[in-house]
Length: 138
Image (cartoon, rainbow, N blue to C red; front, side, top):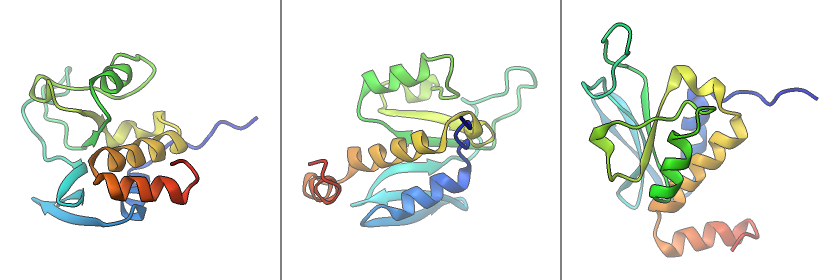
């Protein structure tokens, strides 16, 4: 059986844009995907809190993805099999970080589901229920 294709940064963009009622803002040329004015995925500028442990250089490819809550966040960041991480800056924030350069370690279908869940966590109840109902999940 073939191994599923690893995710790519383009999958993040495509999935976020495929969700209903999405707008794209820009933060220093990086896309910020929003639903109802609430961000659910964004590509971050290099910041001091996410550094390469060997070189000390700021990561320039960090993606922030909202999650449903602290339990989901901890499950992702504590699993050594995933490339997801967090930093003290995001303590108490319902999101995980991942480097675009490591997305290939995540199967594409899992990343799609994670971005969809990020949208669901930020969309209005009415929009989330409608989207789920359209898929027979509501």
